[in-house]
Length: 350
Length: 247
Image (cartoon, rainbow over the protein chains, first blue to last red):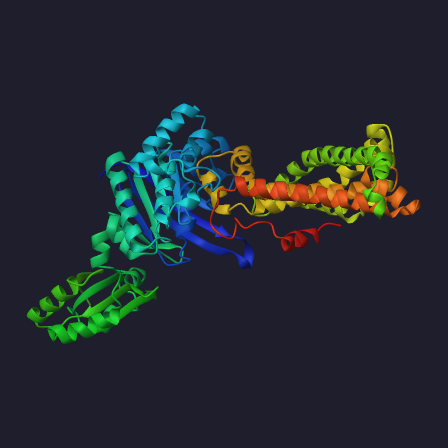
């Protein structure tokens, strides 16, 4: 196993105090390895954004330790009888933040600066000479595939292009870690795929560790090697993506992998099932109906969580396949032949 | 009113009107500069120290807010009289163009502080957070994020501030500050000479229109956000809405 780049130990974050206190994070322990793409998934309000902001101390942890690239950013100090939270000085933190940069759901580009100047921004604030900064910024624009947009203003770009500029900007200080806070949540599926592709690429090319915060299972599937599932401020489960997807052992994980409240206990052990993900293509009702008509295979909807966004279907559905292996295979290949639909066999272990 | 069309009128009153216009412009210009020197840092301080600002400090925020509100509660003419001794201390006289500048600055600075605060509050909190996440210092965030990002809005606010100060100079004219307001009162009102009143009114209208168009144009030109909602011009209705906050 390679070296740790981010270590989080016994991290808690509480907003407010007394009766109105909100425990956003409780006893979080994570160990993110150098060079990996690590996913943190959870529903809204699970504490994902707070957790990622504790990694660069945009939020100060209430207690616990945060170590990034061997440097303790936040820790607990003995103060007489009590333990008190402590953190690095403001100056040290500003330096550390150049090493752990961030991209956002809303891109957060400076609207009154050209793209090139946006990419120059972090170098400007860290005192890189202007000519050198410009040269590096042009290289980065090239790297994210937007060399021709250097002199454009952010308002002239599409969402995906804005995020590419934001990525170039985040890479300007040669960080070891790139934090992505719902970086693709505002983008359409095609653009999401291309941004995820870029992140994967950069991870391979530059060796930058990527931490991905998302509520979309598909994002985790697409690029992450390991994942932590955050539920109600605690890490419900963490491990390799395939392991968690095939054997979710906690309710929180099951809710994410099999949305729609499907519970293992409801079905006999060994039920042959397939998880179908809709990625913005055909509406989902015709799929089931045409499966019955075209193949003559009847499937059982065990659970579904699909949404209709702008007439396109998004979400996942869990289908119980017939016991007959031939029929099941037929259904599976039919589903897989549909555009914008992906299918994954899952085995229940009751 | 036919007087206005005669050469005699302009021969007689032209130099007076020219002097008055220059006085008004000098008073407005100098007061605006000094009022911004005070008001801009105050507005920035409000934004930084507000509860969700990047340097939250409730004591400073509340105290500044209170001082600004006090400054804005006093009608200009009362403030002008109330601080006369202070005015004399600073510029050596209570009257004339110089004597008007001190109360103009004292009165406009709190107003400008609120205008600046409003403009800076429009800057996307996410952009500020992004700058923080890159390790920008407070000064860098003010200098490289807040002020440049709010520039179009600050320029529009500048037009409102100048027009407000221009209006104050006319009030200052009532107690001997000179300028167009002074002419309107002395000739138009006290000597019952309507043509003079009319000319000063026309001059003031032209000045305000000029200031507003130039600033609106500049604001639009420098604004790089093309998407609707931001790029729209400054409609009279919006201006009216902002004016309701002035005294």
